[in-house]
Length: 129
Image: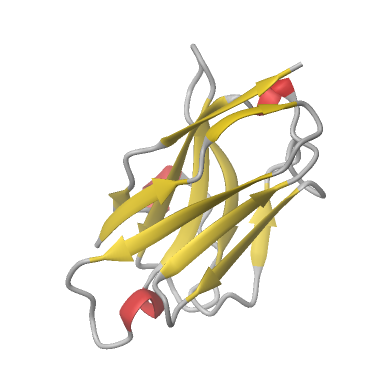
């Protein structure tokens, strides 16, 4: 599966931004439902880190402590899309954001990089203070 992330940009602290991830390619019979999805980010000079994950059904989600309560992940399997709604953005949220897909069990929330086989190219989010 190929992933294309978009929606990044330059915003001010306190602003909101929504990232989108479009999936395409040769899916199995269930389409994007075959994949647990997630968002990671890589701040400048730091390692890539988990932000959020969602099960194949969309029924369960997980968030890193740093974004819990501010970010919301969702998916639209019919449209092969995954979203990350980011509210109350902080300068510490500045990073390149990546979406990822992994063929995990139905109700598993993928959270570690080893859970994912496919990665998008990343979209830059910059939050000014």
